[in-house]
Length: 349
Ligand code: SF4
Image (cartoon, rainbow, N blue to C red; front, side, top):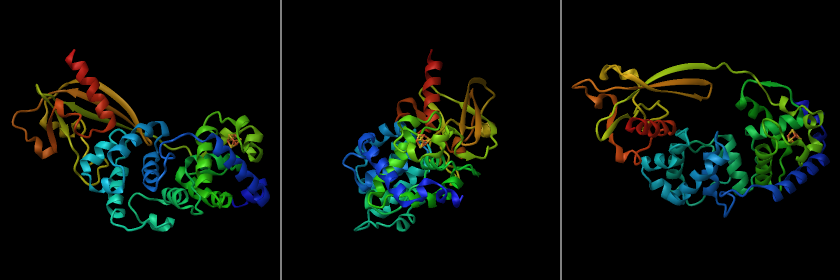
């Protein structure tokens, strides 16, 4: 791994400089128009970087627009209620990002000025090495290289790095020193964005567009014709989980559950009740079976149409009757909102 760069044409400073110039020229003329690049600000950069973690740009775009309208700066976000913040995030998933953003805003809104170094940013909620490098290079021109999944893909292909990594985060850590060596120190923020942009719109996971790639001259795997071999990640074992859920409705409401335990990732977000509370419900008929994958787990969730047993205490289970007309006012997990809309329509036919 250590020899990768020294054996490569980018091991020579002169070639690295040409590589950086070619990449930056391409970025200057081909970068996508994205709302956080328009009238850019530290706040927009922070919000976009949080939203873009594990989420595609096309998914983030409408959320970012609505978010900036509702919470235009750190202060407005700091003073918002947690319910409002979660509602603004509804459908984006990984809600800990929204909670961390909220906490971060409460801290930075008390500051007179912002720190410019990555280490200080890493002390804030939800900020790891990648986001700290992205924020400080883009907003403060700090010489910090980013190394996310896109950068890993581009660099392992350029270097034809055949080392097998346990997972993406191990690959990011291992490639980080190489990313740092290749960084353009005059325009670190633009360079970082250029490398990520290349990974997003040219060096695709499948069928990379090598013939139009601005750095093909430096790319070992592109020349060899086998870029899709890289990066080499160890195959992960998938697991499977079955979950039973209830559909319990009255004439004007639907019964929903709001997890409250601190360890639950969906704390504070409503969802259809789980069958773990079977003691409160009668046996019902199956209404729908939904499949989805989260990380390495394949879930199969069966939703049963049923009704409550008499005299059960729904409060004990963090359950609440939500009136149909109030469903849009609460925060539901993304898939649950889709399921509820679909099943409500089906039941009304
Ligand atoms: Fe990716 Fe191909 Fe460009 Fe290499 S030449 S960086 S594999 S698009």
